[in-house]
Image 1 (cartoon, rainbow, N blue to C red):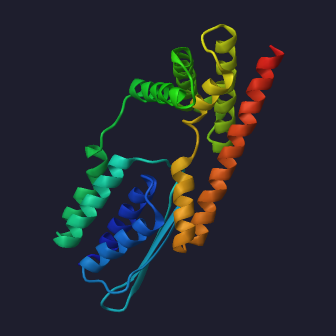
Image 2 (image 1 turned 30 degrees about the vertical axis):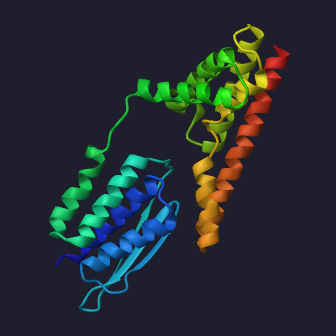
Image 3 (image 1 turned 90 degrees about the vertical axis):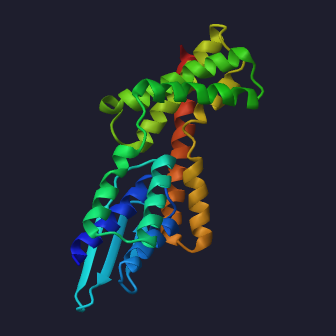
Length: 253
């Protein structure tokens, strides 16, 4: 058996799981079970939100280690489910390494891809449905829809201007959201600045990341949990700063 290819497959699976928003325990357990299904005993797996390290010892006693760094990522529930399903299939009936590699490579092609206008529509619809939860009416729903579209445009098309720094990107999007909300209420399109603003900002709140952080801390994955928690706190700070700046600019105007 080509253990180098097997190790590459396991690391790639771990990276796909992490990139789709999986918890640390899920990443480590999935990679470990996959390697054990191919006859390797006691593989070592270590994962944090931006890195996966896998180490095995071949039957000849030769240690092999792979490390992959993972860039910024979000959450993709469909890809996560497909990775889980593939991992279960490989563990129950391990195919040839080449077949496993082909199945893993096909995951991204099988996962549904959304066009930019569909993503923008989602950014608009989500705040519109949050508005009634915060006591808003039909006018606030419409204003939240427009504000959500504005945030979506910033996230999708403002990368060249805003850059890739997540803190500044979130702060600028929050400023745009609060400024749009204030201007719409002044024009009579909305009723409550607070309701519209908080509805739009909900699309930027790192709820999944914070939940995973708390879960990992309680499970004993302290490094990963603290890393996710710090990222969530910085994102929340960026939302607060950006909202204040946007409202201040609106007050001046």
